[in-house]
Image (tube, rainbow, N blue to C red; front, side, top):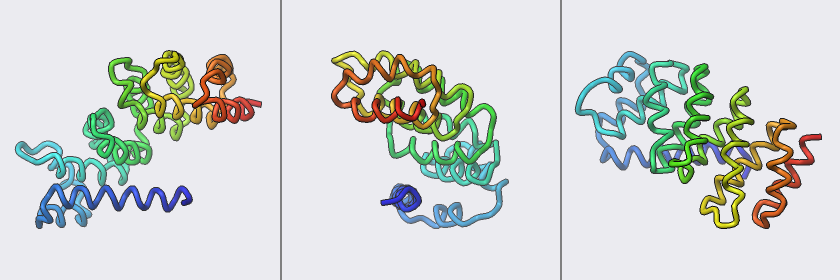
Amino acid sequence: MDEASGTDEELRSFTDRLRGEAGGSAAYERLAVTGDLEELAGVLTETGRPLWARELAAFRLGCAGDRRAFEALVLLLNHRDPERCAPAAYALARLDDPRTARAAAALATNPLRTAYALQPVRLLTELRAPESAPALIRTLAPLLAPDSPHPRVALGCVEGLGVLGDPRARPVLEAALARPALHVAASRALGLLG
């Protein structure tokens, strides 16, 4: 599956999940098709709105480049449910808000949130911001311990550092070679550093 079809499938899964959470309501259908950014922004501030409605509104605003979605999307990126994190990361990457990389770096490097750091790590890789490589290096270093319980996050960091090609990543990538689960990806990433 190529990246575009993978993204299409993720977006389909996202809309199917929210439609299910909304119970197929008319309110869901309205929010899914409206072009009124003011209506979508209102959903983020109105009391009593369900999570699915806030998530849909934030996602649609973010993809439209409306920065009013920033705070809601960062909260969703920090959610314990990976199904909520991935669409938030997708929308944040398209939001073009200068605060995004700092927020993603803060989430990725928070040792209390490492289990939920995969989407912030992927977002940092996609953004290619000045904060990206230092945050991935800082996130990866403690994950190289033999008993680290977060192999997917570690792999995301290794792959991201290869994509970023920042020479500052060399020491941590060389250390990752010793981890069997990371060896191939670390070798590839080191090759991309030049």
